Image (cartoon, rainbow, N blue to C red; front, top):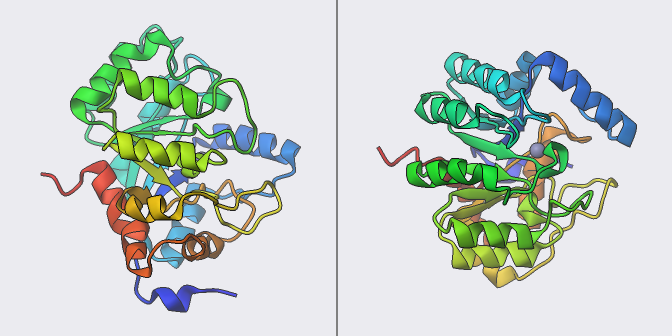
Length: 280
Ligand SMILES: [Zn+2]
């Protein structure tokens, strides 16, 4: 059953959409096939049509370089997306083993079409505290440039994930503007506590609370802390790499113990604040 009627004319800002160049998308889908996740194999046009059909009027588009040498061409592709589709806010990618890291980071910071960066340490195989990234973090901090990071250990724990890595990073760069993807699951409270300590830390709801058998994705944690930080929590889908309908993503938000009046912010306004779109 759809809860769409409850949301009336709500418009959505999806803070966690994925678009890759076609050949990379194909490789990622084969990886999901091996896991038996039945994700949506959609072209860019089909993705945009899905968003349109669900009143999603803006979206942060994420990509990540799975190996050295890929970030630069990927960032060029993301810039093209931002140039052609004003509703898309593309994020770039980095890899610590790239010799031209500082150079393409500067290009991304200077580009009017790159709005932040995405880290997926499990796939990219690096520690967020890799010292080769220090110059990158310093530049992001200086420009207040956001980084969306997958840091919680769900659904597949690995040595690069977990709240201790993030805490060490934030101790070193306390002003960093970071969105912790997937509510930091399953370490919900450990990541939520970081919002108390660091004013530029956000979270996105991506995949948490949706109905799926793939892993235990029920949110459980400090409900009072969740409501206290609701203005820094963003609606996200992981579309098209999810095994359910887009409506299921929308319907997952009321399953969190937010106050009802906090939902419009989660669905739309908070993503604008994360990107600082209203700050001139
Ligand atoms: Zn994702």
